[in-house]
Length: 205
Image 1 (tube, rainbow, N blue to C red):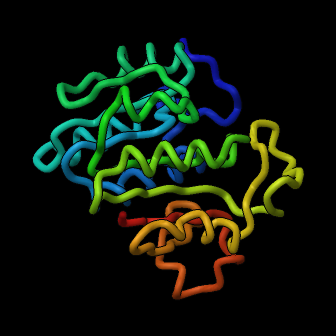
Image 2 (image 1 turned 135 degrees about the vertical axis):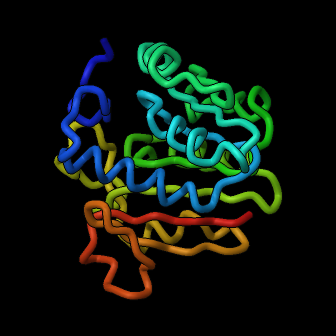
């Protein structure tokens, strides 16, 4: 049994009406409209997201690699979400050796990860190195009071302001921003971003 930390999404232990579950699943179905080729799910947790991508995109993806630093989560994912296109590996998203070990990807997904990471620059550098030229990153994070400021969430280093979130992706050729509230995801341009708790960036290298 995989330990529930209070933030971990384990669909088998949750009701279908659980808001956290629905919000997380919605992001993977949003991403499924974009992905193709070799896909990395960075900080894949219990593995349900990589499984959604493998199942729903099986005709357009060649491989889905889920990476998480929690050994128990990786073991759980392998046992619960087997799919012939999917591989689950133990690894730290800030490990500088990771790009050399994993190679290049056409798509990288990283949902609700960056707010947990103090070594933000190393994390983003790893992503950029592993993304092929012309590849796409889809990354999400909750908005908050800003970098370095307490946010009241036990497992979060901080929660970025909208402006800080946008600045993360200056090295990409093209970036589209979206906002999410519950299962609703829509372009950031149609509303005031600060009215929404979470941002999603779709970045093309």
